[in-house]
Length: 118
Image 1 (cartoon, rainbow, N blue to C red):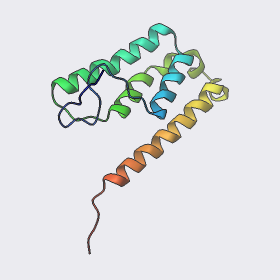
Image 2 (tube, rainbow, N blue to C red):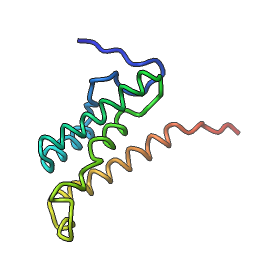
Image 3 (cartoon, helix red, strand yellow):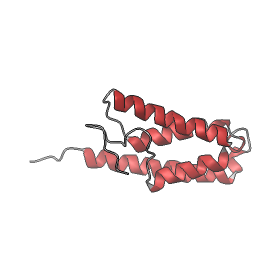
């Protein structure tokens, strides 16, 4: 089934989850760390945000929106709460994920800069 993009949107239409490696990593992290109820709550947060942006014709970065919505309650999970969270495997995964996200965002900013002609 083909889904079109909203005019001017950098993200998918409502109901579609980004499928990049970094989005899949966020999904795997949240599925491993959270209860099914919390995971689905966070996934719905993205779907509602995407639906509202699409309805209002607001441009948005679907991957960034997805990761933010999906991971917004990660601190409520046992492995990311309390004094021992820095020692957990999930903490190391989250650190690698955050580093990869920062690199992706930096590359996107650099690629969007206008070139200077002298």
